[in-house]
Length: 467
Image (tube, rainbow, N blue to C red; front, side, top):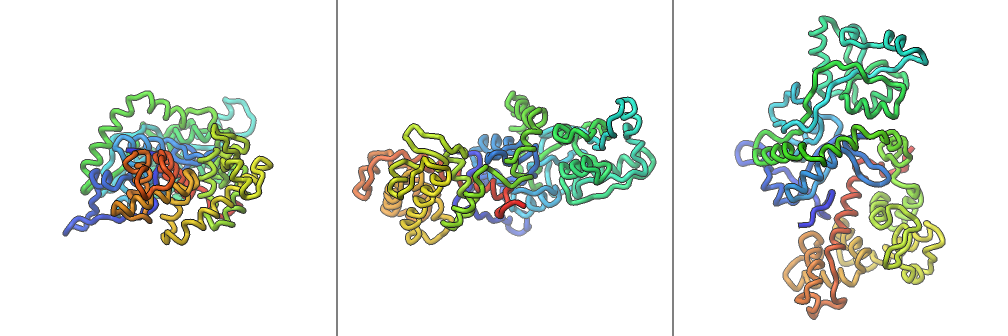
């Protein structure tokens, strides 16, 4: 089975399955495997899930990739920064797993089962450092003990366990803390502290320390809790096999060097500040490349979402304008010189010319498939496959599908399957095949990866031009 980093079927609608008579959602591990994908909810920020230079990254994202590979399915990600809302998606069947840090010690939703700990951290107070003064004077003017929070105002993300932890802290110190819950993620609140808009926030230590690398004016050394174990969550009802498998995998995976490297990559990386300050850190800039503007311009000519075209270009060239393949394809869209010449375009003259030739080629592919395939999502898969393989091989696979009693206008499980069989002489020598042998696995992978990255971009990158 081919498993990609996030593969989204061309017809990816999913429905919650209700158990007879009790109203509970019933989607366990066998259903997930039959469906072929795990649907997970996570939050997006500079540690868990983000886009950098056009590529999806993040601690939770990479863990989800590893787990989905382990169970032999793809993974589809839904983004939601509020744990309560994420759990609601879980309980109504829109997701199978909540992959975000749920505080085991204070989690109270009795319809959600928590997994074994994914991580352990502490809660810390984030505050501003005073101006340039000696260290002993700085420490003397800052909150260094939880008791000193008495009477102070602390802003925290709403719907999380942090406010409950602060309630417990008030009982310990015997005084009140003015806790204000707001709909902002911890990273946003840390930014407000750094800018002087608020004085204090509380968040997980690993997140605070990462943020301190690009907000040097903040202090995150005041610990206000004992170690906190963080877990993922699954539905309590009818998910017994899934949670057993997650726990079995987590227990083993955390002992590996791969887990240690992932943790260091996202929580101990001194280069975190350069990533977050980059023009291509999409959470804050909405950009994936330096060519976004012309990608928007040319995508409009073929009525594509510009993020889909950007995903195609990343797949072809990783936004490298002068790259040449071993076959001689050139530039952003990896156009063959003869193709550019056929459209009257010198593909080597500029990135814009290269993009123009690619758009003309895509438009030609639309002229072949638009009248054949009515469903827009399905048609997009056929066009992407044709961009990679040439339309002749895709038309052959459609004929093979039809001859063998399958839907010639459906990609996943039908035409994609027959494209992979074009390397078998039993099929590429069939009378309906006009273009001979072809190794179709690469083109099927190409479609999955482009569509998957497009879903990542839709999760994080705005459809319109960033302000």
